[in-house]
Structure formats: C-alpha cells, structure tokens
Length: 246
Image (cartoon, rainbow, N blue to C red; front, top):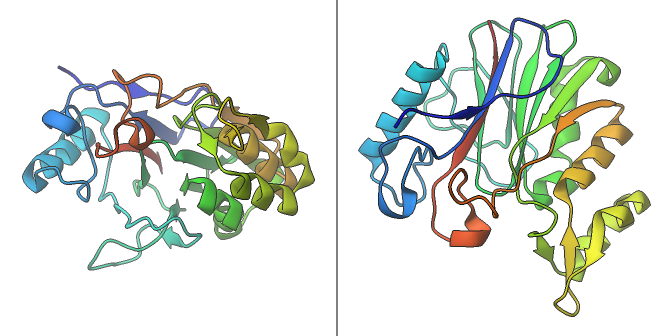
C-alpha cells in the first residue's frame, strides 16, 4: 500500500514544502502496523529505518532528517548543525534550503511554521507539558522573524472530545493565561476536564503575535485507521510532521 500524507492547507510560499504522515502504508506490523517512524517504541529497528527511507523517497524529502530525541521540553535544534547522536530537543528550525525539520507525535500536537517570505521554517512537538512550558514561543524566538509574518499549521493531535486531563493541567494553563478557560469543558468523569489542545495552542500563538494559524481539524484518538494514538493504544507507532525549503 502506498503512503498517504496530509498536506497543510495554508498560504505558504511556493518554496515551502510540508506534510504530516499517516500510518497508511509502511512496513511495520502488529502494534506498529503501517508507517511507524519511531525507533524508541519497541518496533524492529531495521523496519523503522526502512520506513524512514521509504518516507524520504515517496515524499521527495531532501537532505538528512534530524530525528530528535523529544523530552517534552523547549529546546530547539538548528537543523544543519552537525550532530553524532539524535539531538535532545522538541523543535527544529532551518533557514537553508533542502534541510528538513521533523517532529514525531502520537497524540501530542505537531506545529509547523514558516515566514511569509519563505526564508525560515520550523517544526515543534507540543504535548501539554511542552506547550505550557513555552515550546512554541521558543521556536518563534529561534526563527528570529516578526511573529506577524509567521504562518503556523496545527497537525494531527488528540481531539477535544478525547483529551481528558486532571484539574492540575487546567489550573496550570489558567494560571498562565486566563483566556484558557474556554479550552476546557467538564468531563463526564467527575473531577476531570476535556482539554482542547488546538485551542490552547492558538491562544499561545496569538499572545506571541502569530495571527495566521491554520489546521487543527483532526483527532488521532478517534481515527485508528489513519493515526497512531498513545492515549488509545498505549504501545504504538509514531507519526511525523516535516517541513523544509526547496
């Protein structure tokens, strides 16, 4: 089965290329069936490497993809910087052509960035911890351009009807930004809340000065045919969201 990608629906410059993978196609089997791109989840390492090679070939992704060791933090890797081991970071930024940026997710929110002039791109991995800690703001800082000139696209993540959190998560966001109250609704389970990570990301981006925000219409949990989901399955594969300049 051939691979299937989600293309951002945003008015990015022509030289900006971006996509999010689905699990369709690929060589992994069992719990990881499909295009698993994570080499840290228990899948056969040779199969993961073959999946990554297949992705680059079918999507015509240039250069070397700097696959990150993601830790739910705010560090940003400058793509093209030499490294011997996977950089420990939750975002990547590139200014040179043919240097892809990539993040892996399986419910967490991938956010892709570019500027309107097509001179810089970035990708960020934003679970609730990284989102609250400021990974999106850190990425914008490394991009180094006027936030008003930035476009952002929110890739496939856990949807607002599936993301149940405890009161401590809600309290953390509201203490930082009172407007976040609109992103939480009471869960049917007493004492819990349903969080809209897409809405929380939009609030953070708007506060940072980014007004052109797109995407945010998928739910990884409710679509097992297309997406891996840690919340739904526990041990599972990883999707990737990538962006680069031609």
